[in-house]
Image (cartoon, rainbow, N blue to C red; front, side):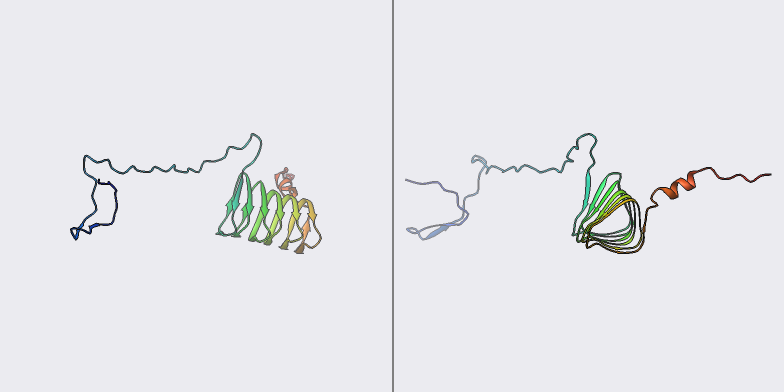
Length: 169
């Protein structure tokens, strides 16, 4: 009785003392089945109406240049440049060198520059070197600020938008 096995190693016939190479599939024998693996596609997760998506700059990233978004940004890495978004979250290990602008800025890391926002939250791990221009500010115990806090956010824009005085002729 003969058994049919497919092996990749040559078989030896002990009685005859010969070696036979492994058998290759022929046209009559079926080819080994290909295994198709499902492919993963990155698809954006639809956000419910009225909510914002958050772009995350991970702790492994260092960005040199300007960051702008019409939605929210969460920064965990380093940015050497200005950041502008609706809401900016700066993680405890994040470092930014530049101006941070937004409706809301929450700082837990380090900023060397300026913050301009309607609402600013400085957590206990925040390290701020520069001015903070705001309407509303919350500073937790332990936060460090080397600069000025000015409740002037939006006032500079209204001054320049107003009518200019006309000189009498």
